[in-house]
Length: 125
Image (cartoon, rainbow, N blue to C red; front, side, top):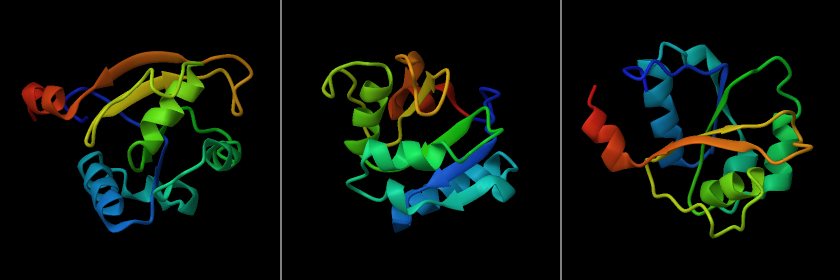
């Protein structure tokens, strides 16, 4: 993420160990440990309605990184862009960027990009 010049205003992570460890690594590498928050609604089995409620309280944050679990994040991505839940499927370690006009979204968001773990590794540090 750093080599791609990606940044975020907040990092919300599932409280589950592996997701939290990943979020801590990302936050440390981006020099953004102060932006990291544990968010129970991102635990495995996350419901988009609960996550959107949390996101609606993130006023002033232009870019929010969510660290959670599959298939939850793929399903949320699909829902945000107005697609079928099976329309977007990506694996563990992937990174997606979705633009929305508001939280909760009033219109479908736009999938700007999606990088799989293999693509991220190929891009290198």
